[in-house]
Length: 303
Ligand SMILES: O=P(O)(O)OC[C@@]1(O)O[C@H](CO)[C@@H](O)[C@@H]1O
Image (tube, rainbow, N blue to C red):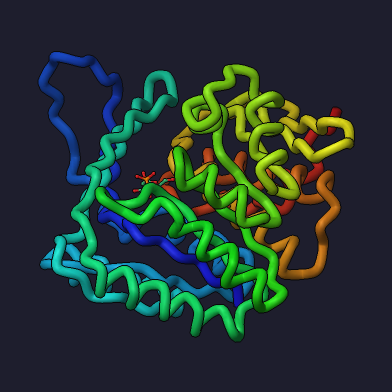
């Protein structure tokens, strides 16, 4: 199975409005409520495509109970580390007029040293039967920046590929631990490396130790950057509108599914990542793909 580790999950609340106006009052239908957080979305997408996945995450307070209940309903196998801090909320507001989504991510509560140890220990144990290790999402406040680097090391010690989707110092340290793939988006990469150009930013992560960096460019597709090789760019043959929340998670799921099957050709990874990402934009909620997701691979243009 593909192990996904999410230290800072969320209850995702997705609202739909006909046209979002800042500073105005909106009458809205109740939100869709789901257990979310990037790794949970990755695991849900993998489950939809028939790949075995496993969620390791934290849960705290009444919102943590809600998260646990929803995960059980989803049928994705999981293990939850119980923590003191209540599980945070993430609010997505989908503007049906322009197809843009506004997201409010609570920062979440800090974990104690004992809770971090429990999460690390569980990751090391659950990696034993895994075929790939995925770490994704923001880290709670006062987190050890080396958490994702530790996850890469756990994978490497077991000879497993690893995919990390992180930002800031956690992303830089993860790069130094020599992961198989890093997948920041363009903004996260620029914030982390201080480089506005995505290829230059990706080179910073490659020089630090990453083998392959996939940079998501939103509607402009995705780049695959490797050391000493041509940069690859892929995009869908047309622009799509919908809910882009979770599109990056679908890309991570695509990469993890390739690696778990023993495929590490960057062009193959990139094209599947672009295809699943597009199929996620069309699906209403993060963690879902358009059921016709496989057909999107034929619509990917590789430069
Ligand atoms: O605060 P983070 O961890 O960066 O992002 C959290 C989050 O917005 O990302 C997912 C979409 O990618 C949502 O399910 C989730 O709640």
